[in-house]
Picture 1 (cartoon, rainbow, N blue to C red):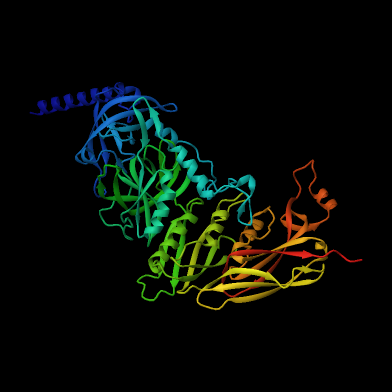
Picture 2: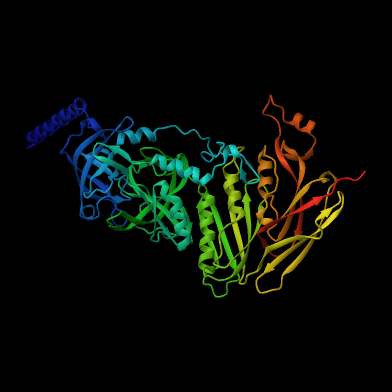
Length: 606
């Protein structure tokens, strides 16, 4: 008995030894499969979440390989098989679903056919995704990616002629070019769009946000998605292959989450999507584990409906073949608070939302919050005047405050000088100015509480140089007698012998003369200079010209001084501006419109 036991032990030891030798001499299968190993007819499986948070398997069959699909990259055509894909076809939100052949990861479900009737998909090779994921980060720690790159220099909040670009429009154009359909011998393959599940947003605000985001490759859909404040016990605590990942643009009373699928999670590094989200390169946006509530089947565009259930890390890279999420990173968010007064009976008058603190998104998303609050509390088509007091908190600087007035016979509009200020400050040519938050206080008055300039007349048609003329401004107001304002205008002697045009306009429709900024301080100061909305501005164009130089406007210069300040052999000189003399007349209510009148100034008598 003992001899038999020893023999068995010896035999087991020999087997173990030979197994160890076999393990040393037989190569271990690589975790990835190269595209060069892929052949038509191969079968495998994919992973994706169709309901809840746990990935499910679906079968795949390789159709073929599309060579040179992208620069130096092939794509694999597959036919997935699952009750949901058989019914819904290509599903937005499945982007990134890992595809395995011979139990090795070959790539990510990422592309769909234009007008395809079968659920055929294009797979981005994992080799290409990992190559993009290994790109080194250029941005120093603590600095928002891209915020140190000059975008445009502004004077008075207006783009200069050399850089007359709308920041959001330019950003959308670049993203749209990144996601343009790619033509192949089989037709056009397009990246599977990213569904943006939006909750708590008003209809008009949603339509405006949809129009802004669709060029970026996202499909906004109103389907909730706020998630819960405290994750449930069944919610995963880390990302997993085939799990759902959300990029959070908004959270709180309003939510907006772009959803895709994790291709590979190892440690804190997560690669997903298999195509760009918006093609931003280095970036920093909040990320979260997502829960899929439903797969919406549609003849036009099937998609996953989701909600974020556990905040975890940040999107750090948005590359041509993948997005990269760092589970240990933190992305900046900007708190937005809106309080609306003057709407008795409204169920909600205060809104609190955190928006992604990215320089491109934060101002646009803050406008959506303000628009939603106004639509839900004062969206009926009635005569209303409003005052918006906005306070923008700048890191390391004093808060900046704006007061906007407006009036409408339709509904309250969400225009705010604060939103334009944030867009210009967060993306400027001089340095980083993080915005730590913005609050809006809106007061509504349900009446046509504004005046418009009906006509303008002069007390006399001619005046002596150095004299004065009375300018009569007839302000009309709904339901009331005309309000006649008289403005005394001094006529400078240098206007002798000229026909002079006097322009009268509402303060909000008049642009101040400002010099091109040369520093962050200049920029912040210029963006705050405005004429009040509740005032008249009388402008008199003077002879000659002035210049903007070193952050200052110098007017009424002689020709010799202009030539000296604008040398022909250098561009480091002043830029010409018109000489304009302005008079501001407080009115006490919003003034809209403009009008002009001409005055003859007599010759100087010797």
